[in-house]
Length: 295
Length: 287
Image 1 (cartoon, one colour):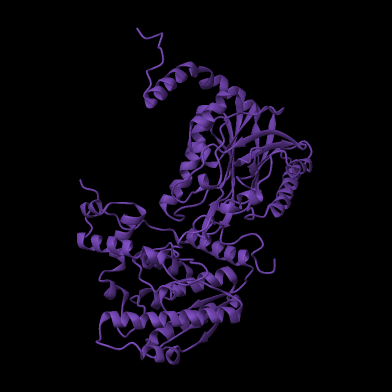
Image 2 (cartoon, each protein chain N blue to C red):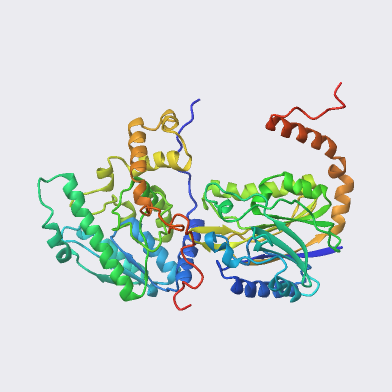
């Protein structure tokens, strides 16, 4: 069965929530016209990226009526979109909402906030503390949401694959470095290698939506991609240009891939957990956990 | 085998040009301007910025301002006019001599390098005054012409040639610029002539800095981009004296690359914990 996914490789306007809601609406209508059953937007698509102290000005609750209204415009379609979330306890997070028909189906708060080099996210937003997957009625299995840097930590996509995800959705705002040199191409190739590897090892499909445009001196590189559960590239958007990329996943591929390459089923999670407990205990200077199997 | 300090990585000019042009358009769009002014010296940096500006905003929206001083090389003006003709942009010539002479008359004493530098600073700052006035008259943003080598070495005048609305070539080393300039179609005469601030007769950048841009950029690339220690640079075959000189100069000129520190007194202080994007919603002209 075919499942059509749209990736809205757009240019959000920095700090302009209302304008971005309008823009998102336009992209959703175009995606609907192209038959997308799921449309993915980039990280912070409703606010722009380099917000600094604008964070409280553009924050909204995950159950905000404007988010619900956005998804109601495209009946039946799943929408994954990035925004600044303010929790009930006034925790400000870089979040992604998964919506359908006005209903919030899933929520992910960016777990890994890069605060090094050109990044300063941890200064203005707080990290999420859940890595979950979300049940949808589509034949793609559960959906695992993540945001940009989250994907640079292999534990996150691998946990989501173990948790039943058949599709990993990554919303990104990746700025380019050294474009036009081999190092710049290598940075983009690094992202691609990582996605290829997760798809292969997780036997899971991947939808990666990266924004484009400029903010201050940063240029976001785009190159959004859709990968099948065998690691093959189904569709890829251009670099640096706005584009609506619509591609189709063949959902039977997931089934046969997992039959022929049963990596997830073979994973020894209890062993991973035991070794993880040992490492954590050692790092904390605690006695090792009891190991009943040790001869 | 010991590690060799490689030359700067080869760059592919076209993607860089694409990014810079989009950056300039984005700066214009975010501020609500549609025009640019650029101080055109006849050198490769300002010529490159003029070509980029013409591509981003269109030649009708670019005004090149030529600001000679009485000792400026006539070749500089010829080269600058060649750029104007090639681009079909607007231009004006404003001689800064009568503006700076009264000030220069105050700078007297034994003829030393320090004195020359003071005079050069007066000229650079006068050009800034002219350029910002022309930007107001032309309803335009001032496009900066500083490159990465100058910024890192502090080889520029604070509030003079370093003043601008944005810096399109500020992350390109001087020796990378030629590739970009060549791809843009900057005339050959400008590409091959020795770089000079043209602040006094016979001045060349490389003469004043005491090393070629090729060598300086290799050291800067190793120290800054690759984060190598001075020891590692030296072990990789870079000249120890040059490495030490460059490292010191980069450190000594940190102040030129930052806003002045504010004595913190209040709960919220601009630049310390009052942090916003430069262009905030509603700051665009006409919005």
